[in-house]
Length: 205
Length: 205
DNA sequence: TGAATTCCATAGTGCTCGCTATGGAAGCTT
DNA sequence: AAGCTTCCATAGCGAGCACTATGGAATTCA
Image 1 (tube, rainbow over the protein chains, first blue to last red):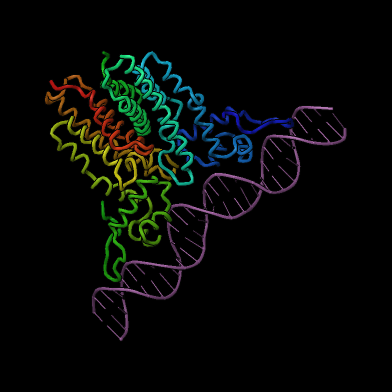
Image 2 (cartoon, helix red, strand yellow; image 1 turned 90 degrees about the vertical axis):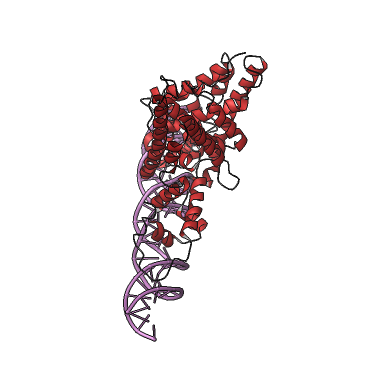
């Protein structure tokens, strides 16, 4: 679904701008201001192109945003693949929290997490985008929950452990750290919060 | 600061609507759609009044929103007073988490937390409102941190405990549960997440 | 009742929103 | 070079935004 727009290129004059660079610039604007507050005028200014070029290259604002989210996550299934590929569920959870702490406090990037903060409320016109992001969040949370359930079945975690709660807790902290970062928290504090969130993790047995 | 608008009433025709009921309706709209996506047209429709009445009674959209936040929190210092009045820091943290889980999953209210979800990103025009809410969040987090530090000094918590981390973690979970609720999580799950977030709380000594 | 005061409804203000019609310039293919 | 395809810049579309000027209706005070 990544390069689904435009459908085909035949010949003629080539693009006079770098599509990937323009997408990176758009991602940054969305990351900083969220979906609805990122106007096409601001986006085109940051991307160095004009509105018709934006629409020709990316379709419309919604598709541009979804492409930016995909780029932000490093591809549609990278996060879930990382969760599945971790040594165990505890490592997967810790990696997720650490990545959120570091990714949300970069010196050269906006504070917080694009996936967490760019639309949780909004107009009814943006309901589709909001639900699309909620679906991505739920998919990642479900991947973590399944990983935890697998460890429970494998005897790596106590039999009575609440996988849904554990995954929900990790995810809540990831979301919440994004707001903390936007409110001014630094990397050191967020890394300690991430570590502290793992303190209640059930011990092996 | 609550009834700072209008400045005075002298005489003449009385208000034909219930100011408190109108504010409650506005709070509900903001709670559901966030600050920027709640247009004056939608607000006035929900409040049962016309734009000039809204501006005469509440000043402008920003002041109406701040009044709605104040009403949502039950007064400007109720939350911090509750934290200060709890039996100990652990109870204060648990109460905060439980209240967020229950308050964000009411059957007759929008999902999530108004303070957490209504503006974390937005246009530069709304930067003032965004910062005002960030300040409220930081004030509550600071109150919790001070409560924890007090318990450490009193010997109710281990001497090496990281108060900033513990308060930040509780606050991150509160924020994150709001997104979880908006994404569809139910009260049962959130209450378990809230309890799980306390599992790593340092033991007494 | 007369005068003063306040509230409400209509109807707009200027502005920004996402998006696009149009025409000419640029570049590929043959 | 001819001919076609595609891209880009200007300019502007209708719609919605927060907000308000105006005038008459409602109520209080004298």
